[in-house]
Length: 229
Image 1: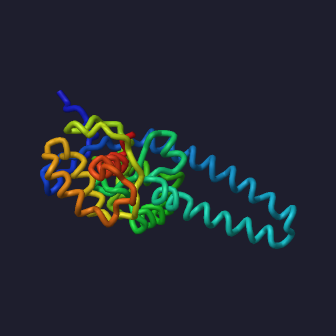
Image 2: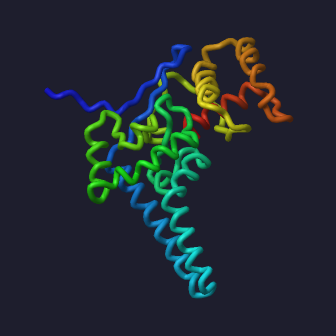
Image 3: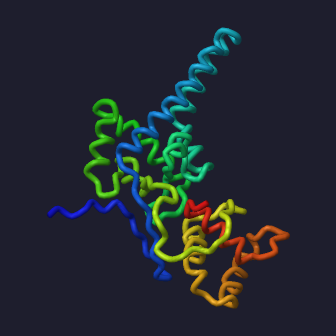
């Protein structure tokens, strides 16, 4: 009997914490792309009205808007909106690094610049073939950038998580720092209160003033990085 297709991506941290996420397949990714295409088309339609009011400058604005929407629409949303364009948010998807840390500028630029290659030979056929043939449903841009698309908060955690609300990042974190905060959150229920306070003390420079419970605060930040609510 054929084995069931495993769509889970697992990462084991240096602290031996098992992180896992469910990879998004071609159907949900294509639907998200169509939603984003509709959003971009609507914005371009609005920009197309500019020449009617701005004469020659309006045509230049249209060309500039087309360029920015085509190349930087996904990058800005992925980096600034937790790996989610409007289409991905509607489908509950998120772009992350292979270690499940939030996607950064370099990786997002690479994966989206290679979208032109994915378009070949026609209508993103190469991207569809790549997603169908790779274990983690990655298109060529994902393979080059070291990224994958996962379902946001769609998989039960391997260990119980703290019962606190998710919080946004107080400051920008690099990949190693993000993984460290996630690892702390994952194993915090297994740590003593003294050990948790020791670990959180390392993050004191990044802890906002007025936070009454730094342990719960950084647990919430970790949940936010994992896409939990």
